[in-house]
Length: 193
Image 1: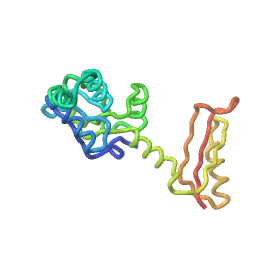
Image 2: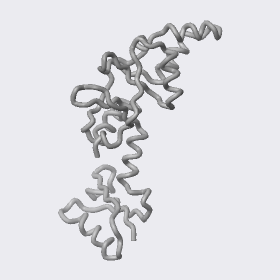
Image 3: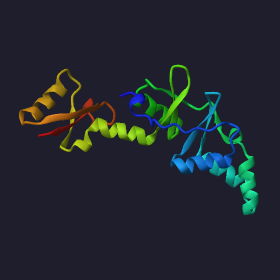
């Protein structure tokens, strides 16, 4: 499963010289949590709703409303953005992108093409949609969870039992992590009749 098939296709970005108030407006209007900061077609940073809240709160603690509005119009995105953000490539796998996000404790990442241009954003919601698709949970049926020995043919044997009773596999997922002691592989089969 590739990033290109799951990324958000609508790209909303800001220029580093845009004001903080413009960035806030874009986030609210588009119901998103982060904006890639793009200068002359190249990614130079990222600004999130958390960055904007942090900058607004720290600079505006004792200001009146009109002073706050003035401040927000004067602070530039380049002053509060995270420079050189992590990115993923359009042909990276969803799993690789999820690992980048998990290891860096971020909830979204810009997606770049072969030329390095930002073409989209990939978010946790996109990863969740891919996971849901992988498991086949929206197609109904029943899921069987089985611990198997790590030997050739063990998955086929489990799948054959489902087929023998008229079931059709919607998905088969395996993992070597967090399996019962003494076993080597966990298997989840979602099947329909």
